[in-house]
Amino acid sequence: MKVIIGKLGWTGMLLTVVLFLSAVSVAADSPVGSITVFYHGVTPQEESIALSGAEFSLYPVGSYEEGKWNLKDEFASCGVSLTDSSASGRYEAAQKLYAFVQKQQTEGVQQTTNASGYAVFEGLEEGLYLLAPTGDVTLREGVFRSDPFLAQIPETGEDGTLSYDITVEPKNEWAADKEEEENPAGGFSSAGVKTPDTSSSSKGSVKTGDNTPVGFLAGILTVSTALIFSVLILSYRKSRIGQKKL
Image (cartoon, rainbow, N blue to C red):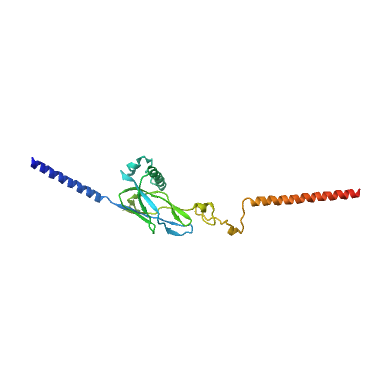
């Protein structure tokens, strides 16, 4: 009996070792990738700059199974379809996924761009990822803003090769701050279009919206009064001349 138990024990240990080695082998065979964010922009003065201090959050949202992308279980109820692989379809999916993430208060992996505008997410498995900036980058008199977007690992190159270490360059736009938008002075509007300088320094004098109409009306009143007096004086003189003739 003891011999039988001993044999069964050794057999169980051997199976455990085999399963463990198989799991390690599978894990080793699974490719691991990375996503490098290169965040840069162009100022209204057409100056190309790296955007440092920008924080991005990463969320694994989907996996590729049976020839198509599928949402992970925790995102199944968000109502997003991944069937549209066009740029507009991916953009819409990213906006909805990020709205769902915010509503559910899901925490992502965060990285901040360095002085050169780079942030790296490493140790990533195959899948679809949502990347979202958690704030704007303030620079001088305005800010740079970006929208959430989707990235996948691996990425297929033009020659059909697969890349597990990918680099993304988030699109961004310049937006003038609130004070600039309300009172532009030869600056740039939120659309990046040069606005004319209407400040007192360029005009040489300051005009308010009510002064011009009041002055104009006052001038008309003065001229009208002078004309009335002139007519009355002429009428009086004519009447005096008529009386003398009589």
